[in-house]
Image 1 (tube, rainbow, N blue to C red):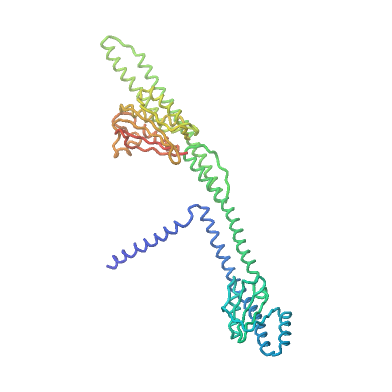
Image 2: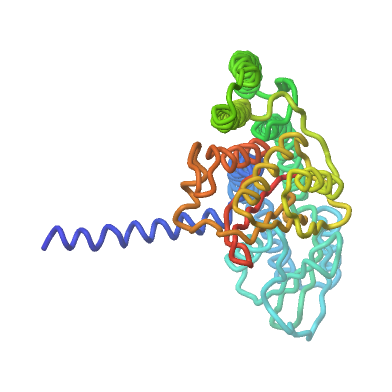
Length: 461
């Protein structure tokens, strides 16, 4: 029971963690540049926040309390003096002294009443500190206005027989440096984040160039060596990629050269056999007829062997050193169809979007489409060829009305030397698929609308 209980709780916790992780991934940027900038931005914001809190919550609070205590003490002194002095002339003298010495402008309004108490609020701790200090120092109701006057703060104090208005300079209470500090904090954060963004973009650009070069090389396009740039690790990766590209290119070139020699060595004895069979003497009518039939079969076998050798070499050689070109699809397919019709392939229709272009190796794609047409011809089928633009590339579709391929055998027939019921070497579809994959695309086998086989070729831009 304990094991079963643990088994119930653990998947639930794991599922909850998975949901949290999924939610975080949905919010976080997907690019390396975005995530790198977040790594820079978060510590920067935390550091500036800590600095702002230390200044705002500690230094600014202490200074504000000291300033408000000083102003409050002078206001209390004024109240005590005005209450003690009974002579109006003495009161006027004290008010004048307060204006000159204490920078407090006091106006007495007898019989007035306050309509509200408390304080208007501003940025900073000085408003709360002044309210707190006055409440501790005097027992009369008061109201503090911070907004009606730009350079002064007006304090209304309700006395038993009227209201005392006191104007004090705002600079005695307001810490003007807080705006400078906030501006410096925000400005320095934006400046450092911009510099980090420019630096990280240069680093990510080198990684993008390396990824693009690897993708282009995977499509078989000759891009040449890439220039190492960026951080040391990225430069090492670029140098390693250039070395790998050079080794693969040399390997393909050496393999192609060896296969060309093998092709010559294999075709030479076959040519001698064909010549020897053609020059063999034929004696006697009956014997000549029998020998002629046998010789024709032997010559057919030799031709089939040559065709098999060509197929094997084409399968092993791949696309050779042919470069990728930007080809207009409609003239290219019309040329391929014309060659197929000369080889007794029945092509019923060619449907191509006008103005369609694709990046390809023309000779290699002719070989791939030729193999598909040859498969249709051997099965006695006719072909409909179409091409259109799709997202990120071009789709070429070859439909025939032959017997087709059952879905369970479609993966098998794409293997090398897997031949169908129509004969052949079993390399036609394999070569076509490898050629398309060498372009960075894909080949899929489907059911045609007429019940035959549909071969869909995708070539990326």
